Image (cartoon, rainbow, N blue to C red; front, side, top):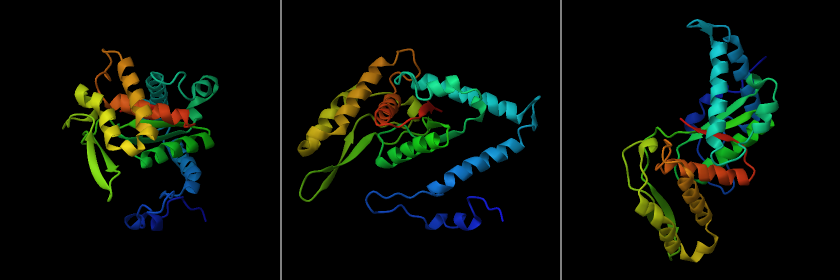
Length: 251
């Protein structure tokens, strides 16, 4: 009997799933072993409606145009800080780009946590294993969260502090303007609060890259003076240095 990767019984388990509390553990649903089958199933389903007529064309032709636009725009965006952007050679030499699997993920352009990194590196690994292209969509039309970094202070007992890196805003990320004072003082503020660990802070390297990319964005660009974009660019730059291979594109 043929079964699909996601059985009804699996879906009924969703409410009971919980993130693990053990170190170096992760929750994946559906499991990683199901991902190749899900990709094949999705591609088989899409092939069934390729000839469906839509407004004088077909669903397949529209899908092909959408894929080409997504690839072109994500390469153009990523090339602002990664030259050449990932997959450049593959996209130039592949004789049949429309058959390359596109594996997509996404997250808001904010200061990231390890769960975001796990998802991004999983996206990269799956795309490379399946011979496809991994694209991370930057969800910049969500309302911006409070721009603070929660950190533990090296006190006895441990205590918490919230360090601001921008002015709070009710606007979406794509409209939230950079506050120069908060941006400039944030690294020193973080270092002072984490004095015992400051010599090894990844934040130093990361914020230096954010500052560099902020200065490189042309003033006429829609990404100028918006902290969300150099934050996500710097994150992706570091990921690329560590072997991750994806493209990125704001919504």
